[in-house]
Amino acid sequence: MTDGIGVIGGSGLYLMDGFEDVREVTVETPFGPTSDVLTVGRLGGREIAFLPRHGRGHRYLPTEVPYRANIWAMKSLGVSRIFSVSAVGSMKEEISLGTPVLVDQFIDRTVARPSTFFGNGIVGHVSMADPTCSSLRGLLAKVASEAGVSLIKSGTYVCMEGPQFSSRAESFMYRQLGVDVIGMTNATEAKLAREAEICYATIAIPTDYDCWHASEEDVSVEAVIARLSLGVGRARSLILAALAHLDEAGPCRCREALAGAVMTDPARIPAEAKQRLAPILGRRLP
Image 1 (cartoon, rainbow, N blue to C red):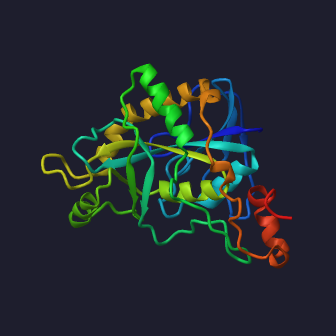
Image 2: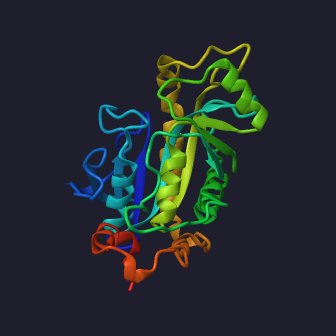
């Protein structure tokens, strides 16, 4: 794939409809197996690599998802843009269930998962000031407006470790922080996509009100599943529309995220580290 598109599906989105010339690709990575085989094909005139975040059949806890393997595999296949779909809880009354939110900020409260490709002989620091791609967000907002699809153009996503849902005290605390949605996966993906210099956009689908809302039921698996289909359908439509207008996306700086980011003296970077990160750092190292 050259300048390929990646789609990572969350709860309720385990495959994209309409693929042509489909093949399944298994990518061996230095970080172990991916969540599932990647489905590669053509969709909306573009070459797409699709991966279900939790595996088909939903087999991985949020903490167990092999995020590094997933992003490394997509980068190695030539993916340069990723659309990520994720079920979330709404933390505000005005964020109605099923209405997509284009996340532009994260608060990461995860503690038990690796969220960087660096380490083991090589140190790097990338900026996460603006953790999702403004260009992809702008394109999604534009196609939604043209299609009359209601969405929220920006929002802050607090990423918790899980797999348990919030306590009521935690839910009220997050509300005091002013966050818009809550989930368990996307901050980790966004960090790794940024290190891989991949444009990354989150389409968050609110399925519940966590447990803060006085007149709504507390979040449960049953409630999430019952409300997923509408939101996932909207996310699919947005992605298809964006693919048709991808050439209209504006410029961004995602693909320069590693410029000047590596702190380690190149002469002291182990050969193994260079080989491990070749798809990601190959053009940045001598």
